[in-house]
Amino acid sequence: MTAVLETVDLSKTFTLHERGGMALPVFSSISFRVNPGECLALTGHSGSGKSSLLRCLYGNYSASSGEVRIHHQNQWVNLSAAAPREVLEVRRHTLGYVSQFLRVIPRVSTLDIVAEPLRRLGVAASDARDQAERWLARLNLHERLWHLPPATFSGGEQQRVNIAHGLIANHPVLLLDEPTASLDADNRRVVVALIHAARARGAAVVGIFHDDEVREAVASRCLDIEQFRQPF
Amino acid sequence: MNNRILLSVRDAGKQFMQGSRMRWACQGVSFDLYPGEVLAVVGESGSGKSTLLRLLAARLACDVGSVHYDVRDEAGTAEATGASALVNLAQLSEARLRWLARTDWGFVEQHARDGLRMNVSGGANIGERMMALGARHYGKLRSEALNWMERVELDTGRIDDLPGTYSGGMQQRLQIARNLVTHPRLVFMDEPTTGLDVSVQARLLDLLRELVDQLHLAAVIVTHDLAVARLLAHRMLVMKDGCVVEQGLTDRVLDDPQHPYTQLLVSSVLTP
Image (cartoon, rainbow over all chains, first blue to last red; front, side, top):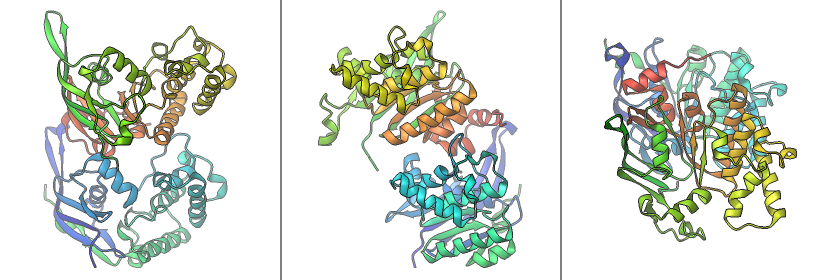
């Protein structure tokens, strides 16, 4: 099996210029590979850098050194060094991300937010909306909310919108940052089933799952981030 | 992915006389823009971002460096033949630049009155660029004007009214329609939402986001508002004292800024 995502000696240190250039090391020299169908769970105490690592994998944070490499349309792309439009291209076709918090856009309805990743792939508007409806229904989001912007939704409702948005395009690589944190037991089970389905179709998944039960249900292996922490 | 460069800027700079000495308003700016790419230029007042925009749009000439553009011939065939046609704007005639500016480019001014003709109707404002391209059929001009008023969410019943009777937000939407009617490939925008009420701003931003996507427009947007950059731009460029201090993917620059000045800018924003 060949990997689709890997890090090579990946390190991240923040330099806080407003604090006189103070260096805040997060992790150093992380190397791992993830194969299609695998789910790698990142573990470690809160503040250990799990979310920072996930953001590096998404290209949202730069790498201080080392590489994030992703297999995109039969080529390896070094995400840390790629041009902005290449990163956006990788995100459009290959790399999905479910963040902890939904960034709402004024005026845009929930359905359109969820349909957007498909629209960006060129799927026709009506087809994209149909699929968005199916995902929202699967995640038990009440139909009366579909046409509203999610700004006023509860945390759990926003999280389900976020999950639908992150999974709808069936990307080959998925990054999940605590996707079940504010969900009740029923919806946690739905998300676990969706992650299983993603793995079954061959997606490589890297995630942070605080809930032990969820992690045990979805992960094929764990990576403890503490071992890569830098003293400061 | 389209690998044909639309706009190429190399080491561009402009200096002005300030008191008795010359001062660089902007200098050393280099980047390539591709079709469909939206670039935000951010920085505080006096950082040189508006000067840069005027250099890119050939409203000012570079003192050093160059701006090249992928010029189509008048039949628009350069793209079809695939021939690379990056042309130095400094070498184009006045007439050719004017033609470029009113067909293949748009320029959205911060103050709509600067970009509109205030003494002719809204419909005539939209029709002007089409007429410059030779359109004369009144019925076609009018139906195209109505079509664009709808696209930018203007009340089509106002087509015969003077822009001075429109609200600020409506004037800005009229200015956008006026620019997009010739299907330009590149639009320059100078603080397009500044000075509008917040609710009007949100509608306009949403409209711009949709249009840019649907029309596959490339755009250079000058703004001091980081939220506008995040919403609209794929990439951004941060300017301070006439120089680019940082550039890259929008969410990376905003979420993981590297330069001291960018860190200061990002950490100074109030989030409600």
